[in-house]
Image 1 (cartoon, helix red, strand yellow):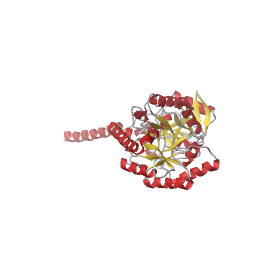
Image 2: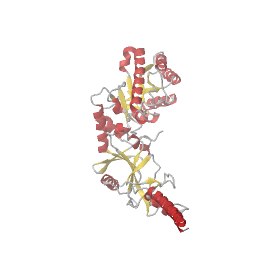
Image 3: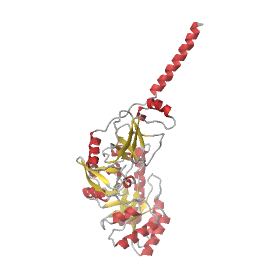
Image 4: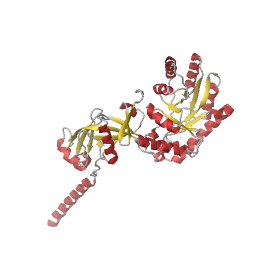
Length: 423
């Protein structure tokens, strides 16, 4: 009888031990810590500059490093470079890049930025990165006429016969020559001509309107490094681009040699540098490298942009509202929920990067007012200290903070105005 009782007790004890081990094994590690020297120096620079609100920071030395990386990658190739404006929506930021690389080609994605880029003058060669409603083209010409601006004719992007007809009609209405480039689908599947036959139908239709000048092709391939079988996707994309280009060459003859054959984006420009059917690449985000561009193809680039924001409140204990009694268990299971830090602003397309170990609260949710980040007891943040984020992308995010703070040599040396807010 005793042995049977002991056996049951042993079973219960064993089960309890297994459950306890399961709890311990499920416990998360402490990832917290303080700022490294880089972010300590950047924090000091922001304090010295008297910046006490959320700000977008561009590290000028790192920006130059990325500019040099692009130059080295494209060195010795036939490829021209086109700077993507939406990813760098700031005149002085674009100037820094375009001057260093002697670039006068720009890719633009909306009417507002098209007008801003046109102010660069007649030497600015502007290619639309997406097809715009024809009304946007009308508004562009009206604005340029009202401002008496000398500008180069944009390369409007055409993705369908219906849109081509709209732009041909606009050229007739305005009695002005217009350039059009055709969007082709090289595997990303978001529109454009999918076969040589579809492309040729638009090319032939465009040639019936003497005011329309065919300026080239645009085939975006950012899907390539993000899908299974990268090499297969790359070969398929290139094969399709070459077939489209050959079809256009047959239709246009000698005029084909003057066309822009645009492809790539930041994720794939280095692949094109090794050989491509295109004759120019578009690059934007790679110059500042947000987190969405932490790709193998951009391993030679460095993060050059950060969001900095002050800590408003630093609490020694992050409690669960209405369920305070569970706070200790939660803290035990995840020590990175021990402390609460409420920051100035928040809810950006960005990820906390310093100090390490910070995470968004899954209980409070996101907030644009004073977002809660939690961290372990190893995170020494106090009110007025800085939290740093890396943007997940540069487009749109760069327009949310006012003037960019330019960091160089341990100081904030300039403030660069961004473009007016636009979608």
